[in-house]
Amino acid sequence: MKKSIFWTSIVESLVVMMIVSVWIVWAYKVYFSSSKLAQTTELRISAIQMAKEWIEWFSNIRNTNWIMFAADYKNCWNTLNYNNNCIANNWTGTDIANNWHYIIYKDTNNKRILWTWTIINSDFTNSNYRNEYKIYKTASWFYTQSWWLWTPIIPIFTREIIVNYINTSGATINSNDEKMEIISLVQWDDSSSKIAHKVKLKTILTNWKNKN
Image (cartoon, rainbow, N blue to C red; front, side, top):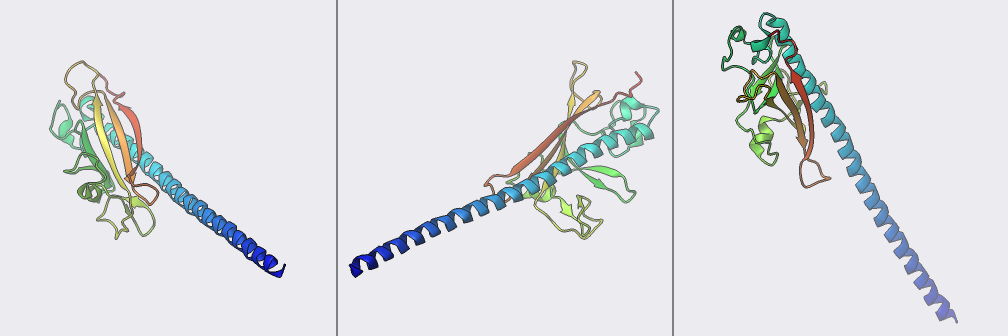
């Protein structure tokens, strides 16, 4: 009788230990999955904010061109980096290019400037792409690509602007078309996925001030 009680107690203990072990493993998996989800969600929110910021800044570049070159909205609405050779000039070779990839940085005069890189295929797996389009975080925790203005911390994001003009005349698409699609692309990787995460925001900017 005593042996039967003894073995029953051992079996019960083993069952309890097994149940506890299964619960601990399950709880760990839930915690780990929740942590990864929380991290990804936090990073996605940051990425959306960064993508929105560049949509706004690109709109600001167009608006600044309007202010600086009010005499010629047609040719100067999209001039690259405020080039005053745009006035009365259909094509200067310095317009914001069609189907090109840019970053935006702040120059020493506190203006937002477009900068082109050699890598234009948006391939996050390419280390050169990640290096050229990387985003820095300043000591004040602001995101920037103006790398020479601060001593930055390098986080995990990349960001680029892609410009595509929209044909409004039936002719070859060029920089004098009245509309351009702006794509703001932010990418990053984290432990929640083997492939890069992406946030891609789009807007259409028009040259509605053109007085033709």
